[in-house]
Image 1: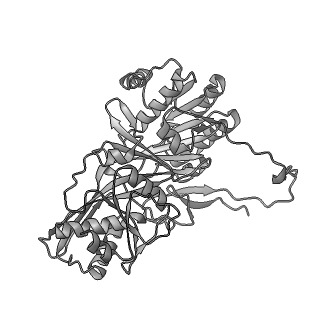
Image 2: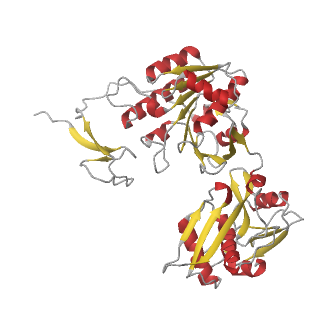
Image 3: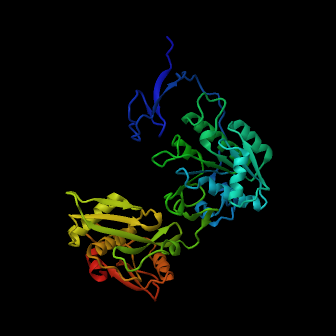
Amino acid sequence: MAKHPATIYICSSCDAQSPKWMGRCSECGSWGTLGESVRPVQKKSTGSTVPAAEVETLAEVSVRSEDRIPTSIREFDRALGGGIVVGSVLLIGGDPGIGKSTLILQVAGQMANAGQQVLYVSGEESSAQVKVRFERLGLKTPNVKFLGATDVDTIMATSIQQKPQLVIIDSVQTMQCADVDADPGSVSQVRAATAKLVDVSKKSKIPFILIGHVTKQGNVAGPRTLEHLVDVVLYLEGDEHHLFRILRSVKNRFGSTSEVGVFDMQRDGLHEVANPSAVFLAERHETNPGSVVTAVVEGSRAFLVEVQALVTRTNFGYPQRRAAGFDLNRLQLLVAVLMKKANLYLSNQDIHLNVAGGFRLNEPAVDAAVCLAIASAARGKPLATDTAAFGEVGLAGELRAVAQTEKRLEEIKKMGFKHVLMPVTRLSHAPASLNLIQAGYVSEAIKDLI
């Protein structure tokens, strides 16, 4: 008796499979993402007739550096590791209105001005709308060609015929394959369209930039396999109420994933920020309690940011803890350390923490600055205006060493600071003009500086 095809349920978020429907995916925890699919019954193999493929010895393979196309936007090239690699596929995501399309239009304009052909494919806008956006940004379009299409096969054929140096797809959720029976933007359509675009990019050596929509959680809409198919995944981060934008690389097969590009959003587009430290500290008021400058490292660069804290007596039974640009759970932990190890009474105090400029800090080197900012705000005493601090804080209240200490000290010195609070660390080279205040515990740091 012939077996009927088996019914399985596939998660649209992580592609996990389940034999029965569940309201919540057991792998990624997403709700309502399991969809029904039919798995055909596999026939028993009676013997393979496929010939064996040829293999290569890695020791005999010649390796050369990837050909890169510079975009003349240094911060964009920095996030990519030096430029766009020929034959690569880039995916850029970000919240609506954050500036994704603006940044990609500027990339297209700069490459076109350099004499390179760019094909702009849009499934959402007409050629007139795209040209108006180019003109608003003050960009010339002599070498930019437009294609208004959503059919992937048409886009592939046009790309092969035109042979541009760059193809831009805006956006990948509007693309569709004729051989896939699903609506545009569905999981199967996005996966199939991206797979075809990756294939034509590799074969024709044409780089593609895909613009992707994001979900409420901040991830690129569609299956997670979309990020696995492409070579580079970039996220444009920032608060729509702030001017600064951070271009962060979360996947890069041709470079480091720790590099970031910093931009300033203006009316005429995104402007590169060559010196982030000066920009982030431009509006700092030096005599305010609760303000501490710290040094963070992103990729190959270090820059200074201001950490602000506000401590007020609570009007409720349970004190509030709020953080903008910093992990709230980490803040709760540091507050507990300050209460237990530094004898700060904060049980009846609301604590609000903010990273000025809309920048988000994730590394543990910021712990010392956060603790000092809270202590300064609680006691109403500001730190010296020429003092910076960095270091990780442990549960015992100890200050722990962090990576790339010398690079942080060089940036602090360059910005004119005289004193640095840091953990006890052996340094191979320290700037002679800096007064290094090395403390073993956060309680010692508070006594020395506040």
